[in-house]
Length: 221
Image (tube, rainbow, N blue to C red; front, side, top):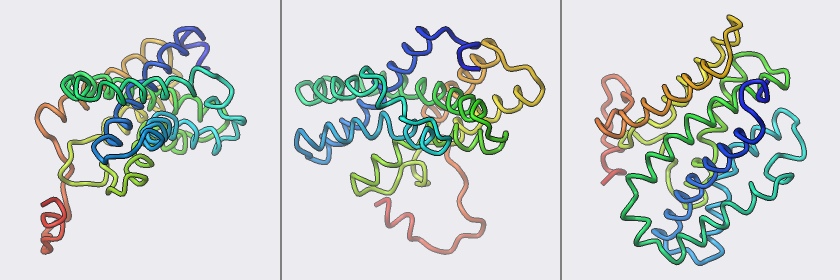
């Protein structure tokens, strides 16, 4: 199904671009945490490949793409090297990095959902794996860095919700036999734009109704 939507070369190029920007975000967090060069490389690899690796293992696409395509494995190492030597300059263009990260989020939630359905999962399970593909690497990154995952924190702009919307559009298109290159691109763009708007206007998910505890404020402080 993926080959029907995008040519293999286009799909590969988009994957590499998404992997690169996710790896940059992982390597930057490692630098902020004062990790050594090995830690920077590990966090870059995990952030870039963790979601896709989890998806492939669940659907039985083994060996996972991360281990069958050298470009998938070496791109995070290149990103880690770049951050290792040039992290002050990379930090200064963090806004651009976040924009490309949003694009990767939109791309991976769509391709992850499509690939999961292609391997025989139902629509709901496919959407869930599409979400996991998009955000799984970031969750693993934060856990390894001893932080509460960003998508679980109330004080962070919406991240998982745009991916959920993108995956939801894909499964609706599959359900009504309307999935093609145009509707897939629309799903990617929708998730991308929602993430950009969330960053621009600091949209956040609501917390518990009539919440009495101040634990979250204390944790954020």
